[in-house]
Image (cartoon, rainbow, N blue to C red):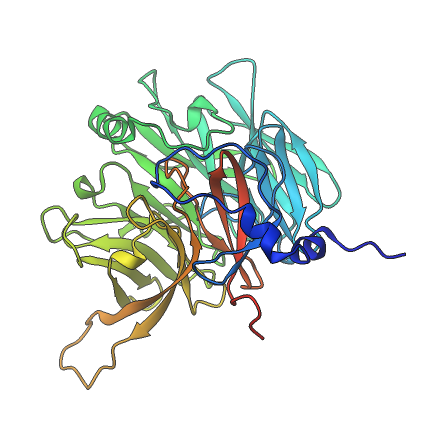
Length: 422
């Protein structure tokens, strides 16, 4: 006799039973009463179905701009206090592939390989490893430079890139500390970022050859270099940021892996202007980022895109209902999602609308548009010290996010189509 898969059993639960398990509404920062999350429910405020993806308390899908999906789109890699696991997205069956302690980096774009860091007996040194999540084949790739961390793997899985601080200056919780499973944001994060920027610590950005483990310095600076992200399609193109409080830095840059074409993507032109939480569209052509002109002014916010091949720019304006800690984009580039924030506690879809151009005179003008917002999940019980970090599944049918609505952290997915829609 065939046994229904976990996902089918979840979808078959009576709606009334699921509604009894819904989180109680309240302040966005109110602590949730620890309880077992339901396997599935229909959000009564939105009509969208939500399912529980991970079953381990403290489990989490990846940071919004780190790839957590295997190249065939069938599996999602995620972290738990016990290590790194992989989830079959069709059956919701999970298995551990790397035991703790291990610090995940990303899944390869070419092969079903998870790349991660492991500590050594010396806290100033760590090692780079890989494990094929299908075969279990595991390989130590490199001993990293002193205080070295790795952030990203390139498109053809030939290079990794990271940074290390020279000398013995305080790391402020940076990559050299090997924090392997820290999910909540620190209470003192704004002060920590200001202190780190002001410290002007000498730092090197470097690459590691994944075939032979050789490290090569790419860029030296006393600015705080962070948030490294390889293009998902061009193995020689790396995006990175000059980190700090966003209004204090020209943040978003790209550079080639040979050190050439080091260029700023967005230049600030206004006091208190901010740009950040940048990420690549999956076409590898467009850098997307949040933009405020200036920070904190209502209706001054945009989701901005820059095409690295053509130089074309587009800004989608949004109001409070689309405000999010992070936005992300669907694999086909047609719709965005957002994870909300303390003042706008919803997982959302953002449908872009272009403003028609009636032959505007001028060259190199920024294209305009705005978002129409669709709410997916009521996150009123979320403590937003845990950032949900949304991402679309490869088939674009679900938005995956982290949540602590039931006390412990789990990963959930909300269906893009409303329940009962064809």
